[in-house]
Image 1 (tube, rainbow, N blue to C red):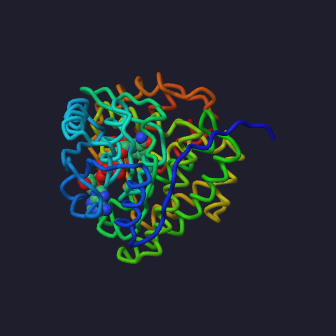
Image 2: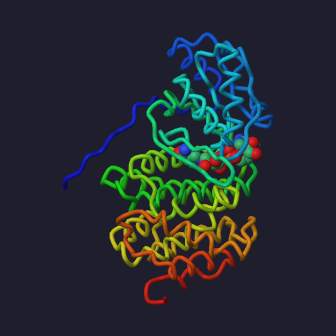
Amino acid sequence: MRFEHETLAQRVRFATGEAPAALCAEVQRLGGSRVMVIASDSEAALEVAADVPVVRHHHEVVMHVPVASAERARTAAAEAKADVLVSVGGGSTTGLAKAVALTSGLPVVAVPTTYAGSEATSVWGLTEGARKSTGADARVLPRAVVYDAALTLTLPVALSVASGLNALAHCVDSLWAPRTDPIDQALAAEGIRALAAGLPAVVADPNGLPGREQMLYASYLAATAFSSAGSGLHHRICHVLGGAFDLPHAQTHAVVLPYVLAFNAAAAPEAERRIADAFGAATALDGLQELRRAVDAPRALRDHGLDEADIDDAVTAVLEAVPAGNPREATADGLRRLLRAAWEGADPAVVTVGKN
Ligand code: NAD
């Protein structure tokens, strides 16, 4: 065994019902006395910043962080002379705080309320027109993360399912992504196990905390693995779909995952076995499909805004983005079959090796 692995420097606090006190302690630890809180109107209702010295509330949060909205948040932070940024919300809110940190260097304390996992990565994303650009920068990694499962009780079941499958996609893609290593694989496998337990529990009892806690724990593991392993084929496809066609992030990941798994599985036998074992299933795809059925997962890209006429353009864009070292060669024909199957919600087995 031979590998290099970088662990990112970040404090993590996990305590249900204790976000206000934990947030206060983390802001103090950073010496913050002028905090800008970033949260959309609905997320601000979660009210966890009552005890920190807030000089500005910023509510304009837009998915995929348009450059113009990032500029307005940067101006707001500068005008308020903020010394710490606190984000309370999903990946879009965390992403906006990261955009401000990217140019200002201000430290971020993230309080995540979905399972997107952006809080545990040093990846930022901005969109301008139909182009989404991303990059990795140590300045955007939140210095501290405050996990409180009570804050996720208001996340509707359908969004919890889509967001949970987004976290599952981080785990699965981490097993064959360009920089994958044994640490990432261990984190990803435990993430899959916890997600497979947590997501059905959330669906069965959306107000129950044990399932919600499993989900937050798993989404942290998933994002930590993903941040180290990098983007595999699944993330490259979803990145293209989200940026160019403005599809909703979590739902897109939820739909595309079984097709990429079916596409790569036979060419990545070790990853396949790891995923199957984590699910406790005969095959990786069986495990994923059983979970998807149990939680009534999103099924087709056509239900989430992709037009059939866009498939060819998507294939062209994905072809340019296929990561080096993907277990199976991704040709234009193979990708077209994959995207068409995902668009119509066909049986993922149609993209497995030997079927095309
Ligand atoms: P989101 O942040 O857009 O949230 C979806 C909706 O859920 C919003 O309307 C939000 O207000 C609402 N919401 C959030 N938490 C809630 C709660 N607890 N109760 C009720 N409503 C709640 O969606 P997302 O899937 O979390 O994040 C998607 C964005 O994050 C995308 O732009 C994606 O690119 C980015 N992302 C980045 C990374 C990274 O590493 N940089 C990782 C994952 C996702």
